[in-house]
Amino acid sequence: MMKINLKTKTIGQPFVWVEEIDSTNEELKRMAAADACHGTVICAGHQTGGKGRRGRTWDSPKGDNIYLSILLRPDINPAQASMITLLGALAAADSIEAVCGAVCQIKWPNDLVLDGKKVCGILTEMSTDMNGIRYVIVGIGINVNRNTFPEEISHMAGSIEKKQGREEIIASLLFHFEEKYNRFLEYKNMAPFLKEYNGRLAGIGRQVQILSVGEKRICTSCGIDEGGALIVIDEEGKREKIISGEVSVRGLYGYV
Ligand code: BTN
Image 1 (cartoon, rainbow, N blue to C red):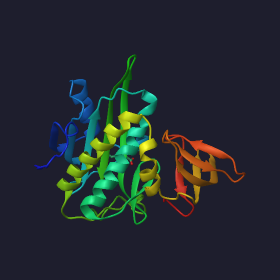
Image 2 (cartoon, rainbow, N blue to C red):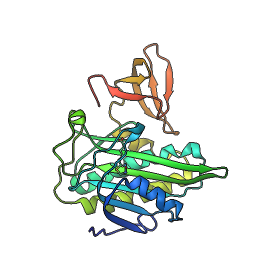
Image 3 (cartoon, helix red, strand yellow):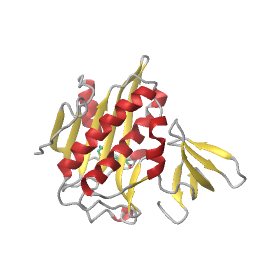
Image 4 (tube, helix red, strand yellow):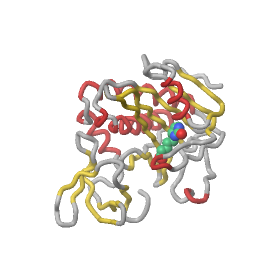
């Protein structure tokens, strides 16, 4: 069981806790199909089929970690929805900082890194129909207190190493997410968040590797623009917009 001291109006109303589930994103999709309302949050003790981005899995053992998904029914254009993921990253970073004092960086678009290791990942999924967005689900996984990882991710995965505070992190995360989400709806872009996002962005002002299919280039990262795209300058001085999903960005010497 979990007791959350919610300080939100809509996000986390209702808040559903389950000990075990295949994936909180999948369960929330089923709930959305059964008319669950905007703001519904489901949180699990562990996942048997945790999903990561690009068809990867998200290892989700029992313990003190956070596996939660937020259901949103925004009245925005489907093309604007990917920015909501960036809000999730900001809210998660704020909550970790508020509760644990640990300052996470963001690896664009939405991984949180601490001491060079990934401690949080976000998977946003959307359902649309002829009328636009039916729903958006933001799934957030945070390694709160973990020191063993599957071998293939052990070089890059880390945790915030807190034995207590999971409930407070969740309450703070939902509080910050609600505040940012409401502000986002006023502008429908990242303009109000450029300073905080770029302030946390790993590699900003430095050289990064841009990896796309069969290609690797070195560019200088200039931070995100109002649409949430990463702006980079290539070796010939040409400015370019990197759209999330197309490519991965890496540091010159590894993951961050
Ligand atoms: C990634 O970095 O690849 C994204 C990981 C997202 C993991 C979370 S855990 C809660 C939610 N349910 C899932 O199955 N995935 C997301």
